[in-house]
Length: 169
Image 1 (cartoon, rainbow, N blue to C red):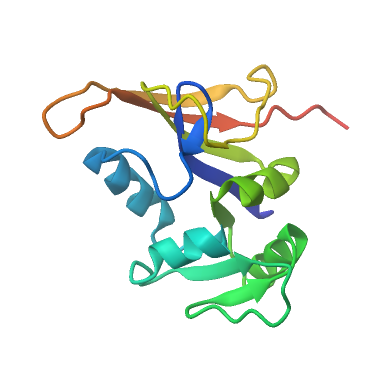
Image 2 (cartoon, rainbow, N blue to C red):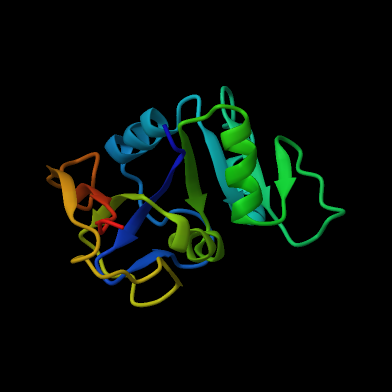
């Protein structure tokens, strides 16, 4: 079975993942969803996202995308490209490489992506770091789970799993 490249992100109604640092929402149900999706996976992250997640890695194998060959992550391994990350995950017999951000890593991985696991948050950030634009006609929604706002979730959100539409060769 070929390796699946999945991008996972929480995205505002106007297409942003952050105002600059960290996730701008506190959504416990989405955090639980993220942890379930990432359990035991090989993760591809940028340096800032990796730094923000230090202490979180337990059964994960983080690959940190960096152009600096001298960079040595505290946990995991540096890679110089999405293709290198993909090749390492495939060689290790993995079935999925989970791309966790940030914006530049999502943009670099989007051409190779097979699946988008997006939490669409009912809030507009008005600017910040964007998630790559994509044509929803090329990415049909396969799963949709709505979560209303409540005392623990100030914003309502919907988890959507999109899979790239493939044309026959």
